[in-house]
Structures are given as structure tokens and as C-alpha cells.
Length: 207
Image 1: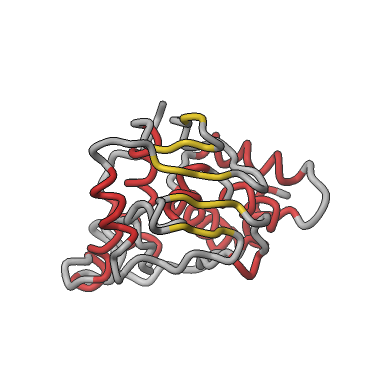
Image 2 (image 1 turned 90 degrees about the vertical axis):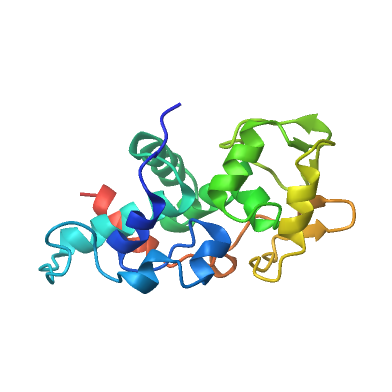
């Protein structure tokens, strides 16, 4: 499976805002955005000329990078969203939110989506009692996500008890004691707290 292997901090600098791709590190002075708050590269300090296409592209790139997926997979999600009833942009974000790795991160079982993706790949989580090791697996209404017994439990409990972990959104419910989570409803737009204007993404793909 193809994956992004370059430095994550460059992504935040390129988008000119914190995307919290490295979990707790992003909240400290070690964060690259604190030390070098400008795009990477030789011409990073120059102010680029903004165009309509450029703004649309940046929103698409930002969404891809927040959820840690590559171009072809993102386009497939857009095609699925466009084929469903409702608002295409909201459908797109809902599909991305319902990914297994994102659900694990939202429940607080991992410090970042990257860590959640690795834990899922290594088979540390179950859905409705069955082990799932596919990060792109789509969780559904009523699904129960639980932690498998193993050495990663200590790390997961550390993440759950961390004071810097993000708030669990309203479409999920977490049982910290038993390390379980449940999908209470499908996520609505006001429950998806990512700094992305999905309308610009739809405009980009609609051309």
C-alpha cells in the first residue's frame, strides 16, 4: 500500500497552519510551525499570488493530508460522495470521518491519525468482536470498537488518559474503563472539527 513517508511537519508548514499530524508534539515548542511558520523550500518566505484554482487545490490537499490518504483514494471517496443523496462536500467529510483509523483517533485511543493507522494495521482493534486491520474500513451506525488484549493496551490507556487528547465528538461514545467505543450516529458537519472548506473541494472536482 502506498503511503506518505516524507516529514509530517513540512505538511503543516506547506498549508500554513497546524494540522496536528504528530499528536502531542504539535502542542509544544518543538512544533515546526512555532519555529518556522512559513512554507518549506527556497522560496517559502515569499508571498505567493493566490488564485481561485490555488485556493481550491490547497483545501483538497489539506483534507488529504489531515486524513493521511493519497490522491487516487481521495478521488474515489469524492466519487462515492457525489453519487449519494445530500450535499457532496458533507458526504465526502462523512466518509472520511467513518474510516476505522479516524474513528480510533477520535475515540482517543491514539495520539494522532498516523499512530491510529499503525495500530489498526497491526490488528489491535476489533469491530463488533471481529478483528479489523484495514485502516480504510468504514465503521457503521451501531458498531462497537474495542481493543484487543496485547502489549499496546498500556499505550492506548496512556492516550485515553492524556490531558491533551481531543474531545470525543458527539457521534461517538467512549467507555474509558473498558476501552470501547460505539458509533451513536453518522457524523454531521458541525461535529467534524477540521479546518477545511469542503465547498472549494467540490468546485475543484466539478470543473
